[in-house]
Image (cartoon, rainbow, N blue to C red; front, side):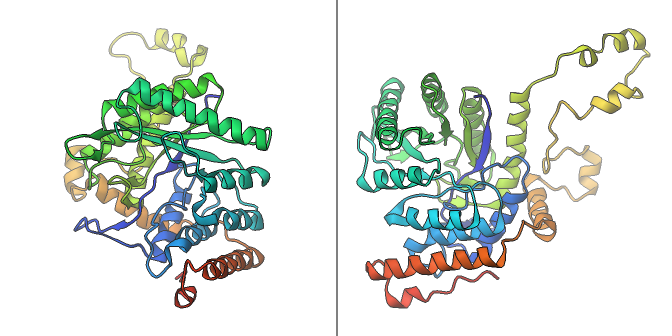
Length: 401
């Protein structure tokens, strides 16, 4: 249909907002990011699997499973999972143990290749009754044609391969397609995330998938090339997400990630939740009926010196057809000076602290907590037996404090 949801973006590392240096995240930082995600009004999928994948003191193969456990503990919103080295086996067990929703992303190797691990994961999720989402991103001129028409054609062909394969295996299996088109800067080899081609290409793929009735997860606004939370990050992420939403994308991967997937930050997520609310307001549009047209009121008020400030109609409607930001600067200049000349990032920092002090996610039961611990223990034993992690790494500390 025409419903649009927002989910947080991804980013491997934590960033220091004073120095802009990045580093591996701690368990506490992942927990705090999930609490903030749980509190944001315009964030519908609290993707904890792929934020802070570079975690301190955790073997890489266990990082995403530990992230999923943290996400389930500190947010009741729908979660994402994946399929690296059979991790989907344990993700399914964890979600089933606590009755949590999953919206798993399946890795795909473009061009025109479906790995055996990705296919096996899709079948496992389908058999568990969980919707799954093959991730079909393309870099123009590298993993796909340099032209938008050719890149779109490649994405649609790959989407059809996934759909036929998985629907033959499990007829009626719920699924969507995750996609993104990114040009390559042939002068440097870098991916470009904020160009018009990325937004237009996303719209083209969205329209083709809608033609076939396929649910869409778009990543056009999931990150920026900018290393800071600046004007560049704002326009590269927001304009692409707006274009995707207007062209029919159902799930917009957006809040919190930047620096070409290197960084995730809850302060950025808070700022971008304002943007998600803005986009949602555009999509919802105005209400047209006798009350909103207000013909009788217009005739009653008449010309100058008439005004609408004191009317019951204004009291009722002044904030019904707009979305008001949480952290944007809306102060008049004198009050802005008097209140400390705070910018949007300053306000976002304050909002994050307020959320962490006041927002209490719905807790798991003791039995659910134990079930998660049991799954993590089984996963550690599994990867130790496969030789993916050593005996010393199995005893790592995954602190919740």
